[in-house]
Length: 416
Image (cartoon, rainbow, N blue to C red; front, side):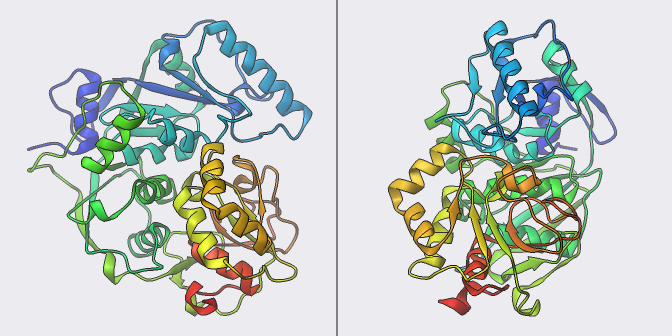
């Protein structure tokens, strides 16, 4: 019996001929990403050695620019740490700034066939690049950067085969909401994406789907490689890699067909994404206080372009705060050059620097008591973006932008 993508990556990284569900794989880590939260005074540990500084990436993203004294102190400590160990891949506050998983995508730090870890749940975003990427806890992170290894229990894999092509106005976020609403959680399972329609999904669309694997509770969310992916990586990173394809006789816990052309625009109701999504037209005209587009899931150039298309020539409704956060400063600049930022700001949006910010209720967009927000970000959990009494709906960037204009939840086609 053959192996799935993740199984083949684990076999390579552990020096074994094969692994199977239930096995314990001790793997060599190719890239370990440390965030500003690693150095925060409330969570940092004294680190005396690194196994290989060349395999370390340090990215400041959650509390940037520093909004309080503790964050500033932690970031100063981290700068000294980077200098002490000679870490070359360091993304401080400035032109190289960005949300960690988006920076990894911009620079192609996640190589096909590799293993990447980070102490953040949305590390699975790098699975878009045929990489076994996963968030780990602080003890495992410390173990990996000091020994070069970590371990995973191999889980069974659910395979999704894409067919057809998304209709205009339907996005990768809608694909995720369909998967979460139809199939529910994928706890203790890997997710593998591929199929004949893979080439119709942009790299940014794949990033959205891989990122949202965390909300499916998947262990790993990994894409099959194709020429589009391989060209993307080689244009950005000259390091050698060995992409991994599933064996023709790979064993899956389940194999599911997704007809992209049959999907519609969806929205997840507050507090959960699992079996909690409905067509946007069925929600009703729910009044909103805030609309947010950003995060590692939906801060891409494609997302900003779609938002700008929807709001072009229109104005944000009175009483609505429309916040837009590019995933990286490089994306911000590209959106500036393309005119998307001007269009968004002329419509009344507030565009922030690249940061995790509002997505996790940290800063630059925290929700107050009893407010309602529609977000194109990673989570709509109670209390995620601020006060626990706030209601958070999750939708695509187009739906969020349209709702900001209308002042209530609405399908983007209804304001055209």
